[in-house]
Image 1 (tube, helix red, strand yellow):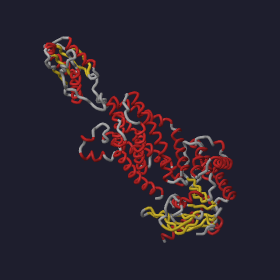
Image 2 (cartoon, one colour; image 1 turned 90 degrees about the vertical axis):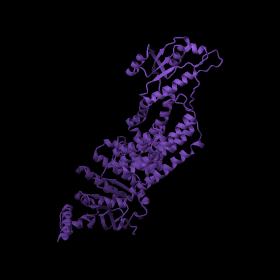
Image 3 (cartoon, each protein chain N blue to C red; image 1 turned 60 degrees about the horizontal axis):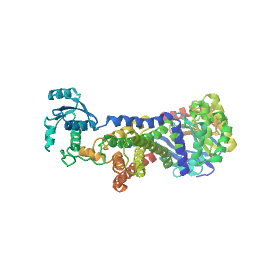
Image 4 (cartoon, helix red, strand yellow; image 1 turned 120 degrees about the vertical axis):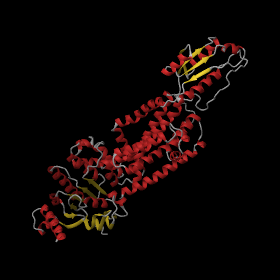
Length: 250
Length: 367
């Protein structure tokens, strides 16, 4: 395993009974990179993320996250990653501050250190107005930022974002991506993001196109576009999928 | 480890605080049920109305009647002139029985002989009837005439141990405490985990470094504490309102009730590994604990009079053992040496159920 990589997987496979959700995929993510996973719902994106985060055991293959094996060192991995999902997963009956205190606490942050970290992310994401409101009562776009704040409290090396902008309006999405950008460029956090908004691939350093459990192509958005001579990622995506399905039917 | 548990317990405390209606329910429902059950399942016979036909009309006969009227069991409704009138009164339900005092009652007493008193009991309510019979014998046995030189006329003198007034409440109320403790502990535990699965926060929790043991212990602690508080409140209520006696050691009861709570909580955990929604957890918890705890534990129906199969089933119901513990300590003041068997059964039960749920939980944590 190469330790320069934040994520490095080989032949990663997950079968649920007779259904293969992730089918022998290989890829690596450099430290500090924004890495996108593009694909329709059911392509295997979330299953891959779950295996990388150590809450789902792979059926086959191997992989490392932050240098730790996803098969045997999931407890170490959990310490150094952050995760935010499409399903908003903070406690809606707790205030924003209480949520952050709780999740910070699970990472062993406490007292002054916890306070400082909360202050820092509050400033960074501009969520000061919502700190003492119940999380269930704040607008969705802001919830997303609060989720991000909570997921980065413990300064994770790698941040996994599973469809983070799902259901958020375009302007809030743009803002969200600017924040992600700052995070990656500013503090060197590796970002691993899945999305089905294909135009968001433009924000990624590299993007993988996932389809039915396999990775069909993986490159920078610029070279993907030039290789398939398309003007945007959406056309690239459609072309790649069509080509693949064509190969299968011919 | 400890601080991880504390973090989760604190968060669980916040959930509880944000939901005052549920807390109110948790404390009020048991009290309400206690009021209802205490009266509804009251199998005591008190102030049963009886009639009297007094053919003698002597100071002695009046003394006997006033003993009956003054007792807790009976109240004398009225005097009747004849058997026919008594029959009509019993048929109409006005009275449940009657005493018939013969004309020569005082004369026979004067001669130092046993005068017969006839008692008529409405046998259609067999439970009440039996208790009336026993009550009559008890009262008649206590009536002594003559100037102190022992002509005890009625020698039948039943003596009841431990629950001398044979108060059903003393028997029922500790049972209610057991049933409620079990219900609260089981249902709360299963709901708190099912809720996190339902809202998706369980995924976030699993992604945090908090391990399964920390999550479970942290979640269970606040509810154990709550269940303990509810149980104490029920006991205080029982002592003050129903005047249920408490002869034994409260500390011993507190200690053994922890074993019982652990058993209940482990059932809740098992239920939560099966249920993915709060409704299922709730329904499963109710069915799985309340019914068997009420019907098969000996709470109301004596285990020894159940069919053999049900007697076997009752041995895996934790409430059965706790009932023996709480009734034994409260009513009989028995010590730990008589309760080791029950303690062992509860711990064994907890261990087995906890092992099954941990295996299931682990498997779910990393499918």
